Length: 116
Image (cartoon, rainbow, N blue to C red):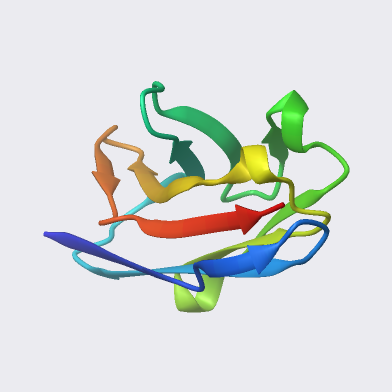
C-alpha cells in the first residue's frame, strides 16, 4: 500500500505564490513518475505538471513559466512551486504517483484558492 500526503495549499491573492508538497510512503518499489493534477468546480481533472523519476518534466500550457515541479528522490517527495498565481488556478490539487507496474496512487487533494 502506498500513501500520499499533500500539504501547502491555502488562500493567496492573485500574483502570489504557494508551494505544494507531496510525500509518498509505504510499499514503494519503483517510481516511474509523480505528477500534480487539479480539478476546479464543474471541470474535469487536468494534468498540471509531471516529473519522471529520471528528472524530465512536462507542464500544462496554462502554467508554463509560472509553476515548477521538482522532486527529492531520497524522500520520495515531489513539490510544486506556484508563482504568479491567477484566480483561474483555483482548484483542488491532487498528487499522483505512478509506479513501473504501472499502478497509480492518488493523494487526498489540497485546496488552492486564489483571490482577485
